[in-house]
Image (cartoon, rainbow, N blue to C red; front, side, top):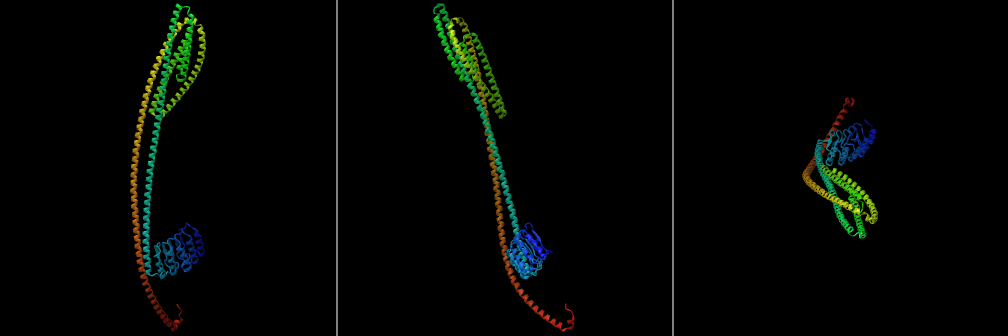
Length: 601
């Protein structure tokens, strides 16, 4: 019971609404203004799908209802329209028929209990051939002949069949599209999983290759370090051999000096016994010989200093030799004994140090071998510690070398002082003839000690050679270990190659399965195409049936027109009969006075 103004305001407010789907305006007595407002609503609003307008008066005003029909023709969103009891005439039905020809969205239309009549029914029936969306049309209570109703019903049945076929085809298409999409998703997932698996295997292969390369590099570094250690030991051995050769040469020189001194002593004894007069000449000769000895001693001193510069790691042994060489130049036996004792102590100290260093080196090598067997990282730490210790030893040797150089410089000064003293002692040679025998004895002892030192150095050389052989064995063991590691690496590479081939075979199998699935999808596509072709054949059959039905409808319309002409003739005859009857009744009524006085009903 809304007023027409209120309904117009409501419909104006709904023009911009996009949420409303169902609108029911039943029983509001909407007339011309309401029909125009509804037309404006249908032109502007594209969201309403169901509109109920039962029990209104929209059809009473033809122009307003025509406006409503033109708006309905351009609205593609409306699906259901209820126009029952709206006093729609045959002209309104013709306007609706024109709107239905242009409309593409309306599916259900209810026109029951209106005044459509024969002409309106024919107009609606003729428009159904152009409309493909309407599948339900109600025309009961509109004085529409039964043949028109049957034609409308048949058209609606065809539309319903067509709608059912279209709905079924859409359903099948959606199902097939879902299946195809699902197959594509599964295919993409399988492909992504396969690619991830291949990527992981590649990463594992790269990691293992990097780890193997790192391990081989570490082993190679360890082997190089061992080679460098062996080379250092060989150099040390060569220096020891050179020092031994120098000691032997020195011993030979000392022996020659002793032999010369003995000959000189014998010549001096014979000359003292035979020729006392030639003592001055012999003293001069002895003085010249001593000067030559001093010059040779100086040369030896220079040679020893050069050897000290060349052999930095044998500084202490060379200092001992320099001390021994300088002791030969001294005249006092006490200094010679003291220096010999110091040389022995230093030699023993050097032996102990060398032995200790060799033992430490052996212990370190044993520890390194154990650490390498346990773990490669522990071996690296042990090697680093050993490098630090060797660096500290090198620093200590450099310090000792600097001290030895300083001592050599001091010895040089002392040698020069001793040379001056020797020159002064030459003048006093006559007074020291008695001490020559004691000096010769001490020199013989020094020679014996030098020979013993040479033997000990030879033993040290033999020990160093034995240790060098042990180190060579360790190097061979390390080489064998490296070969074993390389063999393990090659085995791992072969395993990785086998794994890669297996993954490739799996990938090919999955590719085959995917191709089979693609073939199945192609089969499904072919089925869809067959269904579409069948649908087109069915649609063509429906079109032919519709054409047949339209021809039948045309013949029926011609028959209906003949019947309507006959009915009109009969109605005219009945009207003539009724007029005759009416005139007879009026004549009868006018002729009867009693009837004239009675009231009309």
